[in-house]
Each structure stands twice: as structure tokens, then as C-alpha cells.
Image 1: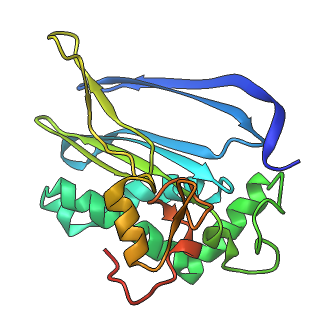
Image 2 (image 1 turned 120 degrees about the horizontal axis):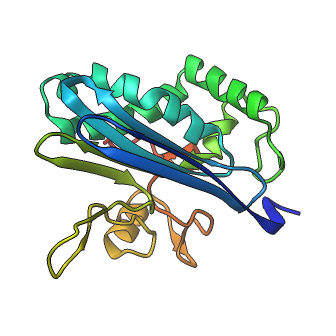
Length: 229
């Protein structure tokens, strides 16, 4: 049957909150997938009066998206880049930190526990998921789009094709993109994939993954001669 339902689950889960500086709302819907693979963060209590909003769109399973939701904020605020208010560099460093942590024994164990806690409705959807301790993040991943909001600036970082847009209530142009999609058929992305030894077929990385950057998905990150940046 694969990872899809016969009819979409259109039930909505919503939450909202506010702080001295903003009001926010979030709504999620499972859709056609057999389980909800996405996660999000909405935090208005980071050090230095910073707020953080993020979406992690899982694929192949929910393990990586849940793991990143659990770890992202705690790891971000520990970074020297964050403490020195170099927020753009802090976001980049934290994205890389997520991948590093998922390869460590503690990360592998936590991903396995998440899989056991939340269940896997289609354990054979991805090869190698059975019997390999490191296979969860090898065949599973998530996009990430994260926005830090300070008193004066927005800082956005993304990996994959989840989008961030800022809207304004006045002026001729009301919406502005904060992120660019990472898709395999984008010429710079295609060139990067081919330089790393991969290929693009039917607008998918190695004929499989339909986005060109993500957290996890270590199956596509096996060329260790490339810089980890």
C-alpha cells in the first residue's frame, strides 16, 4: 500500500500564543500520509528577547523531524555565534550540528526510541530500516525552515523546499520570500549534486529524493571527501 492513505486525513491541529512582542498561530494537517511526519517550533522566550519559528517537513518517517524539534533550540542557544548575536551564522551552525548529533551514539539511540514511541505504520517503505542501528536517519530526513525574530531583524535559514514568506499589510508588494527552495532541477543545485558524485533523474536526487538539501538522509551524504559545510 505504500506510505499513503486511501483518502486524506484532513483533521487540523492548531495552537496559538503571544508574548510582549508578537502573536502567533500554527496549524498542521496530516493529509495523504499514513502518519503525521512534520513538526514545528514556536518559541518566544529565547535569550536576548529573540523568538524562533520553524517547520520541519519529514519524509520517509517522522523520526528526524521530531528529533530536530526536540534538540534545535537547546543547541542553538549554546552556540558562541548565538551568544555573540551572529544569528545568521548561528542558524547555519545549528543545522550542521543536527546532522552531527544524529550520527553520534546518543543521537542514534534517541532516533530509535522516537521510532518505537511513535510507531512506524509502514516499516518497509524504505529499504534498510530493519535491523540496521543507523538506518533511521540514513533513509529518513526532514526539510527545515527556521526564522529568528529580533527587535530589529528577521533571520531565515532553510534546507529543502519548505518556504518562509513575510507579509505586510501596506504597499503595492505585500509578500516577500525569505527562503529559496532547494530543488534538484535548480541549475546550481544540480551542479552541486553532480560535483559530489550524484545525479539528477526526473528532478530527483539519484532518481529518488525530490529535494536537494535536508537534515538526515545520510544515504545521500556518503562522500566523506567533501567539506562538512
